[in-house]
Image (tube, rainbow, N blue to C red):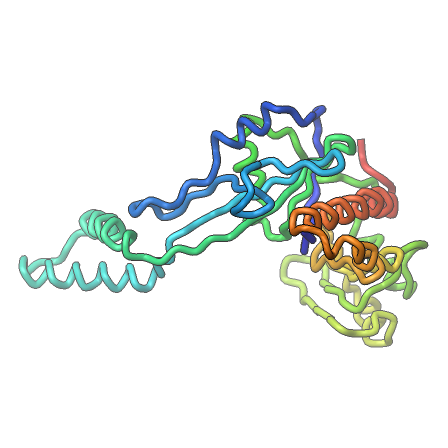
Length: 300
């Protein structure tokens, strides 16, 4: 169990794990898509289909998993079916079909085609860390994050969270690091970045697998571009790309971290899962405060 991305939220009100949380998840457990439904979502056991618990607790943290299933009905296929139906009706009536009737035909065809459409599922993970006041979501896309946080809010009736806010400009601080060719103590520069010119229509330069201290990067900075994303390595243990919203993309736990699990590799699948999750959450518990401190710490 390793997150590949990390979007953080801070609980702005005290939050505690309780038996009531598990009961609420049960009320919104996943049920497969019915033939007429375009999509459904619900909670499933994080440990997989053989498990039963929708809330999986390890080391004071609780992991949840949201399964989303949606019917694959391409818009082009639906548009073609509507066009064919409209042409048939117009040939029969000898006059054009009005817009409102076209919309009604579209809804009718959607209802007819959905039962024959294939389904696609995806899983989204998040864990709640009440002791540190964090909700951590394994996604970097606004849609993926909103799916999980929105459904969690629906499940709990409330979800008092907010993105982390720091004292100093993330873009300004990262631009200064790149200009100096080094990151602060315990951090080092990776090999990727995204540079942007100020303004809505400014140019964008994306670099990957490149020496970030080279002359080419320096020329872009001298031309006024600023860092929107920057690859970083923390303590030679965790690598990631940090963006201006403090989202960690392409999150990787390096060999020095994974090697500590070698003794657990022969255990059951559940034991390995728990060991990986506990280790990952423990690393992030140390990384997050260290990272926020680089930008002046959290704002009140």
